[in-house]
Picture (cartoon, rainbow, N blue to C red):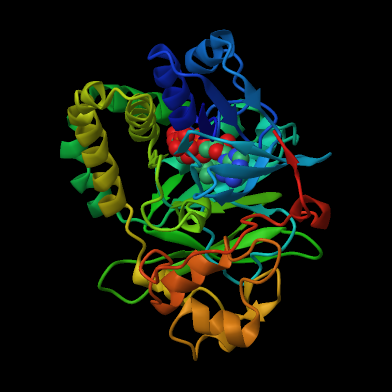
Length: 399
Ligand SMILES: Cc1cc2nc3c(=O)[nH]c(=O)nc-3n(C[C@H](O)[C@H](O)[C@H](O)COP(=O)(O)OP(=O)(O)OC[C@H]3O[C@@H](n4cnc5c(N)ncnc54)[C@H](O)[C@@H]3O)c2cc1C
């Protein structure tokens, strides 16, 4: 049996392609329904519908908390129970999370990740009539702005940290993808009238007990920082790009047998990565090769996005000395500055040892202090990769 972890675009593509080749497939996802980040709650999406009609079993609301490469097993936990399942082939399509960069006030209630606020709105958080400031970087900000506005929010501003020259440099790559031009134009139309300011970032959030206003800084590359102003808001939605969820992959060790990784990225890239993983796992590697040009094209677009939305140096100075970088363990910026790696900081300060297990603070601190990225440090997280109940870690039911 092929087990696919993740039911976003990559996992859905992998599962459908593998089934097409005659393989028996099961999909696991920690969300209550398939769709991943982008198609969350979209029951009318063609691919989600095709997946639902495929008859492929999905274990929804189920987290994979550990994997054993030698035994070919996964340890699963739901809100009710835990169990172990065996795989013959394993496809990891675990997607990404947002990169949060700490700034004074970022832990106030009402301050969310950009995609995070959208995800909450998709799950029922009322946004109608709420004043929202969106900040950070990348096209996700436009998608979030459009979504929130369609659902009645007053989007006061989109503050994009990249400067206008970077965005202009993206045009030639964009023109190679007519569908993207169309998608971009639709998003621009959906947010018509919302101020979209480039070269700007949210410097701080203030409020009594929850966010009431944010301060925005406008900078010009090569010149001293120019000006700042405040915007009143009910919500601040701030995301600085995406960080792949690779903890499960790392926990399996190097080159584990029968494991296929669908790398994540922009939706088309994730999808084709999923297709390739699905075909290869099902034994049709020669068909997968035919998709390589599609992947290269999607990859070039993703690489151009990365270059366009490279984070500016000024963002490294966002946190004040007393700003928490690790919000789980209350570790401030000041306490982390003396260290030269996340590993050292963790040993000395408990940074990354709380419930998020470093998912939020590790990428943030690595950016802020120039520490080696987790992948370069050859980190191999110990199971469980998510906080788990003690009973889940005791001898488990085999399935
Ligand atoms: C919060 C957020 C919002 C986003 N919104 C948009 C948007 O509106 N528009 C857009 O173009 N792009 C958006 N993106 C980017 C988006 O991730 C990609 O476009 C696309 O969803 C990637 O597909 P994927 O299949 O690789 O990953 P995902 O869609 O992230 O799917 C991965 C799935 O795996 C599940 N998973 C991960 N680990 C485990 C585990 N151990 N056990 C069980 N399940 C697991 C996750 O919960 C998720 O459902 C968003 C990203 C984030 C982080």
